[in-house]
Image (tube, rainbow, N blue to C red; front, side, top):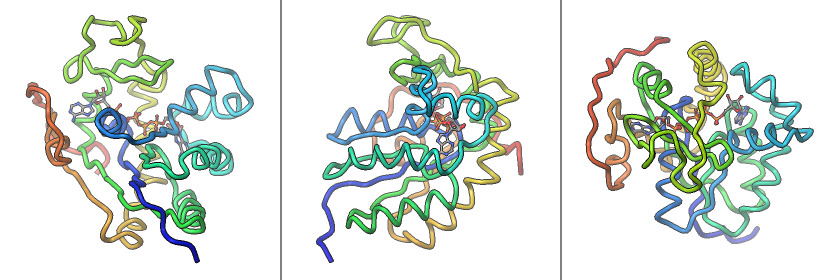
Length: 234
Ligand code: AP5
């Protein structure tokens, strides 16, 4: 029996496009926190044409979920790197099995999760955001033409390189990603509520900065958000 490690060990959880990466980036900028996005890791492996990348490429491109086995291989390396630090993980776990395995590893090492933030955003709002999303693929930096616009249109703020659309952000593929969320990932919410009743925080907000304000973060100036509040799949 060891003593529990100090520090923040946080998951950011939610539908594709709910703002997980954006919220994490803000926290990481303001505090000394390490950050892992499994989506970013996969995109880098795919770009590098590594063995992992070749195995994952087709699944990511079509909006499915990469196998639990391959994801665990990736996450194990990342979790080793995070030992002794405060951290945020975005994009993992995405299935009940991944969630149980993550808990097992972290509990064995006396560093259990101590914060789970669930971003609860209606599908209609997400669909609108995705059509306005632009990314700098090499760094994973994310922009939005209406919300967090780049300083120079079409260019990354840091490198000045051109921004692009994520290949899995087409309406067809994005709908598949939402479906995969409902089928495989959403059941984790009940699991979290049962396993971490005191550490699960649901932040609901359909428009621009409600989520950031709910998280106690300083919000940028308001933007016009006229999307409806209906869910596509319910
Ligand atoms: P991943 O990269 O994790 O994609 P995702 O979960 O679909 O999430 P996104 O990156 O699309 O969105 P986000 O929630 O980070 O939102 P963002 O901040 O960009 O995964 C990609 C693929 O990899 C998966 O489909 C799967 O194939 C595979 N994969 C990854 N992990 C896996 C795992 N564990 N198991 C199996 N497969 C796995 O925000 C969205 C937009 O909204 C942006 O334009 C942003 O500027 C804007 N925005 C954000 N917040 C706000 C706000 N408050 N107000 C207004 N606009 C906002």
